[in-house]
Length: 547
Image 1 (spheres, rainbow, N blue to C red):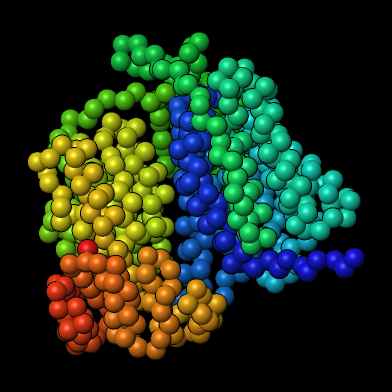
Image 2: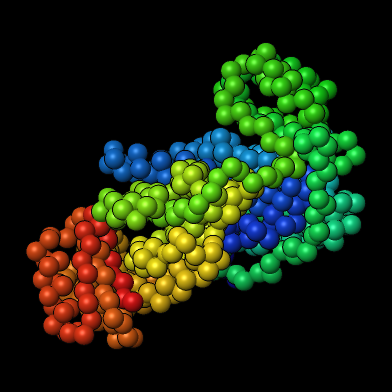
C-alpha cells in the first residue's frame, strides 16, 4: 500500500495549531475550571491555560506582523520560538506553567525544521517526548494523575507508533488516544479527584490542545465529549479575613519572572523548596518563570530578589477571597474596529476596546476595559465571533474580583450598537441584559471585504481581489464592485424583514459611493430607514445591519 502524502510544516501550520488550541480552550474553559480540585480547588485551570496559550498566539502574531512589515515571510523557527517564549511570559497557575513547558518542548523540535520540510512521524515523536520531559523537569515533586501523566502517556504512545513505522497522522492519533485514556485514569490516581468524581483539570486542558493538533494536521474537526464538570468544590475557610486552604496548606500563590543565571536559579529553587510547595521554575539562560505556593509571600519574593531582577510579580490568595468592591452603577464595554465606531460608543457612555486589524483584543485589554468603567455591574459586547471566548475569560477574571459581568454574544458591531441603543441604565441588571440580548438576536448582520487569496467558498470560487459579501458569517456574494455587493447583501438581509438598515462605512470606501449606496437602498426599500455611520474600520469597506 502506498504511503500517505507527507504533511508539510510551515510557519502558518504552527500558528494554526496555536489558534485552534486557543479556540478549543475558549470553548471548554468553563468546564475545565469546574474540574479544578487539585492541587487547590480554586476553579481557574481552564482560564489559566487559555491565558497561557493566548500569550503564545499574541507572540506568534507579532512575528507575522514584523515579517509583513519587512516584506519577508515568517519562518517556522521564528514562529516556534515566539510560541515558546510567549507561553513562558504569559503562563498562569500550575497548569499554565506546565503547559508553557510542554509548548517549549514541542517548539524546540519544530524549530529545527525548515519551512516546507515534511512533518515526519519521527519529528512528532521527538516533539511529544520533549514536551513530556520538559513538563516533568519543571516540577520539583512530580505527582502522577495530573497533566504530567497525560503528557507522558501521549509521548510513550507516539514513540511506540514511530517504532512500528506508522505514518505521521497515525502517530498523532495514537498519542491523542493515549492522552484520553490517561486522562480517564486520573480520577482514581488522586484522592481529591476520586472524591469529586472528576478527571484532572490540567490533563483535560492538555487533551484539548493535543486534540487541536490532530484537527489541524488532518483538516477535520472532530466532535468530542465535553469534560465532566460535576465536581463540588469545597468552600474556602476564612480566618480573621485572610483565606487559608484546608489542612494548613499554603495560602498564597506567588509568580514572577526573574532574570538570573542558572546557578542563581538553582539557589532560588532550594530557598523556595523550604518555603512552600507546588514549586515550578521554567525558562532558559536569560529568563525564568517562577511559581510556588507559600505561607509567606514576602519571603518568596525576597528569595527571588536575592538572585536576580524580578518582573510581573503576582500574589494570589488560595483560594481567592471574594468581596464586593466599593463600586456602583453599570458600565458597558464594547469591542470596536474603527475610530468612528469607537467615538460613537463613547458618546453612549460605553468604554471602547479597539481591536487591531486581524487581531482580537487580548483578555488583559478587555479586563482593563471592565476596570475603566468603574462600575460594579458590566455588560460586555465583543462585536465579533473571535472575541467571544476572550470576553468570557476577561469576564471570569472580573467576577473573581467581585464584579457582576455579563457577556452578550454580539458577533458584529451593528449588533453591539443595537444592544447599546436599548440599554436602560435604570433597569435591573438581569432585565437590561435580557433586553440587550434580544436586540442582538433581532439584528441580522453582513459585511463586505476583499479576498486576500484564491479559495472555494460557499458562493463559488473566488480570486485575490474579488469583492466578497457575507451574511451572518457566510459568504453569499462574489463580485467586483463594493457598492453592488454591499447592496446585494443588504437586499438579502432586508428580505427577511426589517425596519432599519445600518451601514457602517470603512476607511477604504469613498464617502460619495457610500451616499449613493444609501440612496439605492432607499429606492429599493422605501419603507425601510437607512442610516450611514462613518466607522473608519480597515479591511471591511461596508458592514451592514438590519433590525
